[in-house]
Length: 538
Ligand code: 93A
Image (cartoon, rainbow, N blue to C red; front, side, top):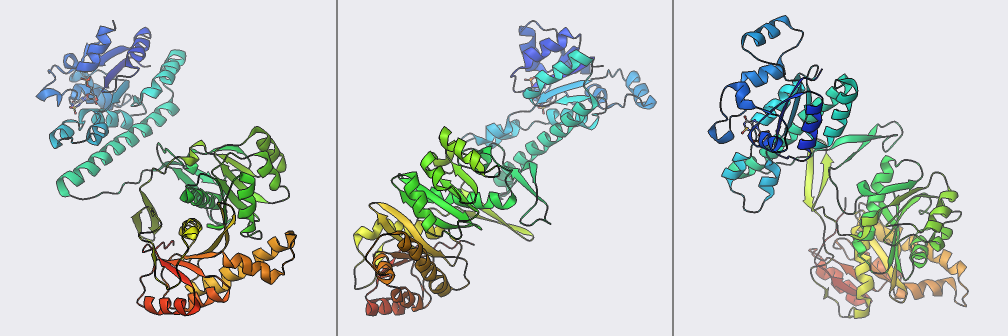
C-alpha cells in the first residue's frame, strides 16, 4: 500500500496533477519548500518536511531532507523487526513513494559565462541521496525521477492500490542511472574547471541486439546516442524490409556521409559496398545520377547500399528492377516508388531520413583500438590551396569535376584514388576508384585504371557509336581527372596515369620528392595541382 509520499522537485512539470491524484487516493504528501508552496497554492494539502524532521530547512536550503526521519522512513526494511523497532523509537514514519528531480546542474553549466559558485550551488545533494535511498529499498519503496512516469504510476496505484514489484525495479534502475549521469556531468564540469582535464564520457544505453556482428559467429548490438538530432541513421525510419545488420549500419553510414560530402544541389547518389563508395554520381534527375553511379562499378553494386539526397521516385525505383540491393536510404519516397520497391523484395530495407540534407551536428569522430579510443575532429573541407605546379596549366573548367573527385576520394579508404569526369553538362560521375591498397601505385594501376576500362566496356557496349572501344576509352580518359588522397611518394603514379591517357591530376603534394613528380609531369605534359590538404581515411 502507498500511504505516504515525499515530493521534492526542481522541475515542477506535472507535479500538481500528480499530487492531486495522490491526494484523491488518500496518500499523505510531504514536501520541501518550493514544491510545498506550489501544491498548497493549488489547494492540495501538504505536510512540510521541516514538520517531519523537526528542523527548519537551513544553510540556504542546502540541508532540507538530510535527516533520519526522512532517510529512515525510506530505507527501513519493512519486515525487519529491528528496523521497525528502531523506527518506532525514533518516531520515524515510513515513506512509500519518493518523487524527486534534481537541481538543474547540466542546464546551469551549459549557460554562457556561468560562474563556478552558481554551478556549485546547483549540485544537488539531498535529492540524489533520497533517490538512491529509495532505489536501494525498491522492494518496499517506489522512486520516481521523471515526470513522464507520473501518469502510469498513478494509474497503477489507482487500479491496484500498489506499485507492482516489476515497476519498482524498473524505476529503481532508472533512478540509479539518473544519479550516475548527474554525477558524471558534475565530474566532467569540475574536472575541467578545477583540474583543467578533459573527460570523455560515452553514455550509450539500451543497445539493440542485432542478429549477428560482422560475421555470423559474432554477437552484436547497436547503441543509439541520447537525443540524436540531424542526419543520422539513428533518426531514420525503416519503412520496409529486414532489420538492419551490423554491416548494414557501417555501410549505410558511409553512404550517408559520402552523399553529404558532395553537398550537392543536383541529385546525388552513392553506392556503397564494404565501407567504400563503389559508385558516385550527380545528375539533373535521380534516375540520371543513379544510372551514372551504377556505371561506376556495376559488378560491385550487387548487394550494395544506395543513398541519395533526393526523394526516391518511381523511375529510379524501376531502374533497380532485377538488381539486388540491400538498402535504400533517402530523405523520402514517392508513394508509387515505395509501393514498387516494397513489391520488389520483402528483404529490401527502405530507410527514410527526412533530415538527410541538414548539416551534420557531430564535431568529432571516434574509433576504438584495443585498450583505447581515438578522437579526432571531423574531416571538413577539400583543399587549402589550388596551386598548378606544372608547365601545362590546369584548365579552370575542370575545377568542379576535380572537386567532385576529391570529395569522392575523402570517402574512399586509403590509399585512395578516384577517376571522375563530367558525363553530361554539370553532372559528374566517379568512373572508378582504387581503395585500401597499402601502396598508392597499386590503387591506380591495378585498380582504378583497370576498373575504369571494364566500366567503359559496359558503357561502350550499350552505346551506339562509330568509335572503336579504344577510341571511346581515350575520349573519356582525355576529360578525366584523377584525385589522390595523399601525396605521391614517387613519380610512378603520374607515369601510370599518363599511360592511361589521364592528363589532369590533383594531389595534396608535400612529398620530399615533389620536384621529381613535377619534373615527370612536365616531361609527360600532365597537368598537376597541389591542394595542400591530405585526406587519409582508415
Ligand atoms: O540542497 S540540497 O542538496 N539539500 C537537501 O537536503 C535537499 N532535499 C531536496 N537539495 C535538496 N533537495 C532538492 O530540492 C530536490 O532534489 C529538488 O530538486 C529541490 C526541490 O526544492 P523545492 O521543493 O524547495 O523547490
